[in-house]
Length: 173
Image (cartoon, rainbow, N blue to C red; front, side, top):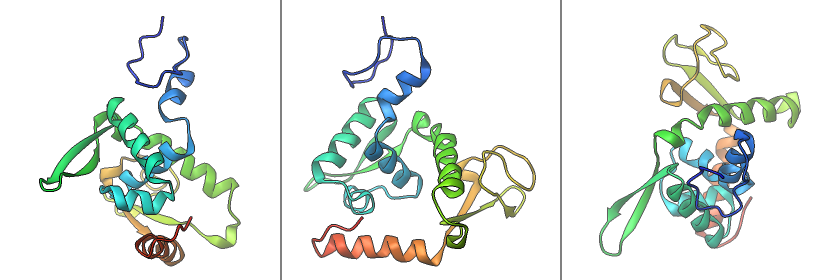
């Protein structure tokens, strides 16, 4: 019998932690929503613009992440009710997985000429952090709140183009 409290009904009846984790975060859209939360996007429209997901897709992922205890909704406007989404302790603990995906993607899914999409500086030592999971300079485990992120000019332009396309009603991915 599974002890997972996820609302995902496809939770495998297994003791395998990989299968259970995949049941919570095992699709592209969920990981992209989490990426946006780690990048500081907290409002629905910004998350939707940056992921390129449909309104239904993004809303479903946010509801599932909230039900799974990965995120918390916070009211920021009463009339009409509007919410921001923030990572919970459980959600913040997913950062090492995001770092691993980033490192793998930077290493295996891009050409070296493209350079890093985001350069991280480790606040603790003040040096470039590298790809993780530990700081390339001091060897400490990297935590999101101990990193200063600087998106490359190309990545910043890509994100800005998504914002503009979203605002004008077009879909940009």
